[in-house]
Structure formats: C-alpha cells, structure tokens
Length: 407
Image 1 (cartoon, helix red, strand yellow):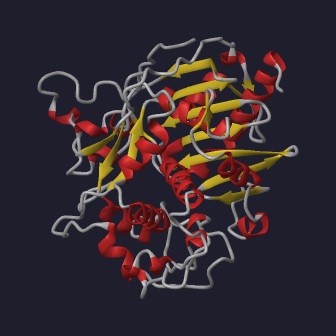
Image 2 (cartoon, one colour):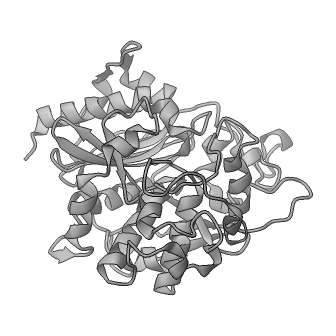
C-alpha cells in the first residue's frame, strides 16, 4: 500500500506564515480554480469558502481491510500507445486512487497535495448522490417520478421544466436551451456556475443563487427524447428533493447514506449565495465506502440501508439509443440512469459517477470492484481524460480478476 506523497509543481502553495504573495490562493480572485493551484484547492476548499457538514453519525468507522496488489507494475494499453502505471497517473493528473475488491483495499495512493485525511471536491459525482436520494424518496412514495416538475416546484411552471417530469430531470432528458461547453468561457455553463457559488461572480455582478436563475431558462426541443447532460438539471433535482422531503440536502445525505456507510469523516458541501448546498468534498476512503454501498445494492452488513430495487433499476441502465444521440465518442455503448453513467461492457453493466477535472467512482458488481479516484486536471471536461482513465480501469479490472478471481 503506497501512502507516499509525490513532489509536484503544486507543492509550496499556501505554505509558511504568511505564505509568499505569489503562492497564495484565494476564492475571491479566482486563483483557487487556476492550474496548478487547483491541485491544492481541491483538497482544501473548506479553508477558502463556507461549507456545511454532512454528519457521519455516532457509530464507528467500518474498516477497509488491506490486501495490497502490485498495480504499480501494470502497463496501460491505449490506441495512442501504452503507458506505464506512473505515466498514466501523472498524465491524467491523479491526486489519489483507491481500489476496493470485495471490500478490501488492494491499492491506495496519495499524490500531489492529497492525503488520507483531506476532503477532496468530487465535482459532478455529487449528481449520483442526489440521484440515490431521489430514488429513495420515490421508493418511499414521497416523489412520483412521472409527476410534472411544477407540481413540486411551482416556481418553474413557466420555465423549460414546466412540462418536464421528474424522471426527465433524473435521466438528463430535458429539452433545455443551454450551452454546456466548458471550453468556452462565455458559455451558459460558466454563467450558471457563478450563481451556484462554485466560482466567484464577475466584478460588479450581483451574487444570486440557482433558484433565482433556473426559472429564466427556456425550453428547446422535446422532453424525454435525447440524452443531454446539462448542469442546471441537477440543481432542479436537488431543489425537488429538498422541497419534497422538507429537509436540507445535507440532512438527507446524512440520514439516508452517510451515517450508514461507516464513514471516517463528515463530508462537506460548498454553499451557493442563498445558503443552499452545492459541491461536496469527502475523503478518498469515504468516497470508496459510498461506492461499496452501491456495489452491495444498499446493504451494509446485515442491514438493508437503501432498497435493493433502487440499484436493480440503475444497474439496468438507461436508453442507449437516446444516449448515443449525444455523440460521446469516448463512451460507446453507454447509457444514463438516475444521475449515473452506465457502462455496458462484456455482458455486464458498470456504474460510474463522473466529475469535472477527473473525479470518478466506478462500480463493477460482477467483478466485486470499486475504484475511487480524485484528480485536478488542467481542463474541466471529464471526457478529455477517458483515453487514459478508461483503459486504466480495464487494466485494473483484468489484473484484480486474474489475481483474486471474481464471483
């Protein structure tokens, strides 16, 4: 098991008292999200902005037994040429990586500015957490997935979601006039993210929250047809679950997930200008424990924490033809269901929570495998790293199955 820290260009940020001016990082001036500063930021966000905690509960942490495997000897085969293990980690800007097989940690490493006790931003992997909360509320009869959004959120009656169903939102099949181009600084996604509190407003711009902005979006196309991954949908869904359950998101996550996975630490959420929860941060091992809950279909020991039917549904995946229409060249034969990316491969389905700058949580039920990974890449779109990360996942899967077998 490798717990060593590797010196990188990130080292030296915010060190010393006071830190030298050229090595200081601040949220207000945007330096927190520049590169390589974000290699420090993503492990220290609660030092820069207000956050709200998700309580881990009173119980003891659930141990992750350690059974090391020599994954650092792997070569990663790609169409563009093979990489050594270290080359794959370095070129994909890996901050930390954990591999669990049957609940045992077979590999764990912390690089750059990461460490076992530090919470790392998970970016859009948080969508998959909200998806589980929504599914649990559906099973409890609190939410009807076929209900029009305005029956719960009348504020959105005149918006793009006025005739969308909850299920349309959960599966990212809303006809929305919105530009999700992270590579264009003037696109809708960056203007929207400013209202979420995840980046500061422009100079002279009023700080407003998502609930102020979402009603202004218009419809384009039809709902329930093509898959279209668009950031505002998760804020609509998180608003839906809060309103339906009459509880803050941090309480829902704590009550339904975090208190049951044996987490070592609370996780935290950044806050939008209205005080609503947005981006979570958590430790790598707790990220893996969440994945283990999904792998076991909501069961922890002899307790069924979440209904198994939730996971039966998600693991079936979504409409592959609808997903293919989105044109993700790096994700052939994938689908999307309840805020989870679903990989259909070799007769099995694997789930992935995916987040900007290289975050992912990968769950393979057949091979009893959970891979948790944090990163801080130079560019936001997760697909830009698929040519390295997906072959790395496959190399890990093949090696673990060969060395330890699968059920």
